[in-house]
Image (cartoon, rainbow, N blue to C red; front, side, top):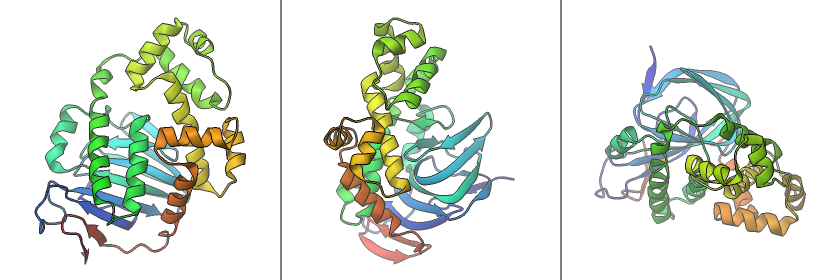
Length: 305
């Protein structure tokens, strides 16, 4: 029988946790129905996590490592900076790769879960790109600065909810197969100079139709999507190892480091240097997990569960 985990419960070790109660009274319980539960979850070694669900809907954001998720009808390979939505009690099993994995999770308040169930971001769980990824990235950065970033976290969680709940109406449409071919080519060739005409030829449609359909189905234009793929690759490389930013810019297909910095700032709201500092800060918590230790920003106090 599967196990449904409660708020803040995970099979991995929880290095940090923030209970965010934006509108709660000062002495509200940590896991009240209106609270967000933000956690950094570490799996140090490769292992297979048994089938389970979670009582709340939540997002998982892979920070580093390798990971595969299996559920009825799909198998999903996570890459760093993939954001995946899970409905409540969504049964899945996980396979942690060699070297372990580190996640940032965002659990949705029970008071908001009805909105997500009526208008889910995706059917089941799927990779989510675009602005949602960078909102999650900014939220994680604020999470590392808790408890001094309560306002930032409250705003970013609200923006993330608003961003993802506007996408699903499109999920009822049939996604054309050529759209997946275009997306696959972008993911393979993002370092090269991609042209709209070439992508349209790949799809077998008119460039204008490609642009309109891509923007409607993906929630962002082709250029922004390509830039997001490139920036996410840069983030993944920084998460894996220390690397010179000029070298990274060249490897990612940018003209120079300044070009990468401008694009990175436009997409994520941070410079590559600021992102790297956040990655280094998160690494400083590895190996220092304290189960039950959390900040409850509803009361702005530290406590041990």
